[in-house]
Image 1 (cartoon, rainbow, N blue to C red):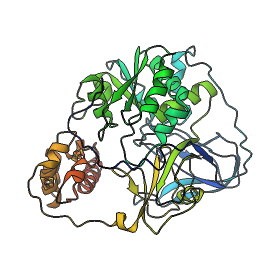
Image 2: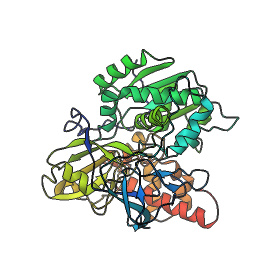
Image 3: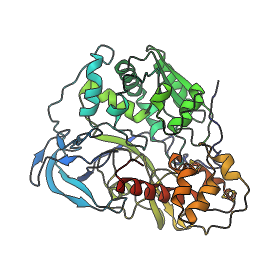
Image 4: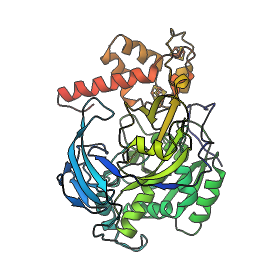
Length: 441
Ligand code: SF4
Ligand code: SF4
């Protein structure tokens, strides 16, 4: 049976055809620029200096605080800079630059062995030491997600293979080519949390991935595939949980509060590597598509610069209007192609000048289409009215902080109102206000 969640949108385009049939191709660049804030939480602190020689997988930055994770060298070679670079936000971020010696000499590793026999108590610390955070886009540190409070009981692990975003095919290819790593990582998570049931969720537009993952699940205990209807944003944590369990995660609560933990397929594969091989997270698959000559699913080292990846895809096929990290609904425009990719960079999409043009917004005609589309059940047109008048308190009362910035309201709006973009700004202002008051957003 195919399942889904309430509301959301059926996208009229997916733009996946250019890459969905292309096997993953390795690309290793001359240099990597590894930023220190690839995860949610305090940035890691560099523990190497310019001129140091580093080995592949060596810790180059130490974790800070409860949410902290270490950062590892994604190539072996010489540290050529420890400084700051401009990134996606307004504030420059710390970055360690390493010139690749192409020797791929690994730092000493400590494999824990088979995920089915390893001591479950060792799994979460190994995940933290491997620097793993959510690879589906959210970048939440995985060891924290897998450390519920005593009163929170996990009954089900959901693996997100929906890949409902436009343009992206990296998860699809991972499920087709390296599905064993996903099932292995899922089993490790289940054993760490003492959970009997794990479900890999895949949209029905990927029948080959469904077949492959079903085949692999048949050989392991407690794991299965759940087919989802193709709908956006099916890969959202709360939407997945609603589809699979029928349970709604209450406002302000987490998946674990309804007994579930959700991990992306890429995150599960990284967990498998951390346990079986003792390897930290040093690479990922990223889809490079749009106006490039040879679209691809590239396996790149963390910190590979966008320009190098576009170059590896033959360069621009026409004049680029904008370049974004991520898919068409939630991707973030990058200010220039000198920006490095991070652990959560699942795609680079190049748009031509026509597609990059922003459209003027029209007046609200009170059609209610945004309300019908919102998967969270918000009133986007009312929040927008509050946002336009800078009435932050009103926007907060209308639960703007529960907005997942999925873009469904903007997609459906016939007046092309800049709904999601406004909500992002309002959320940032509310977070800044809360920080100034010393509280939480
Ligand atoms: S962007 Fe926010 S308000 Fe708009 S549909 Fe998504 S969750 Fe709802
Ligand atoms: S979809 Fe657009 S025009 Fe319709 S109610 Fe929402 S904001 Fe107004």
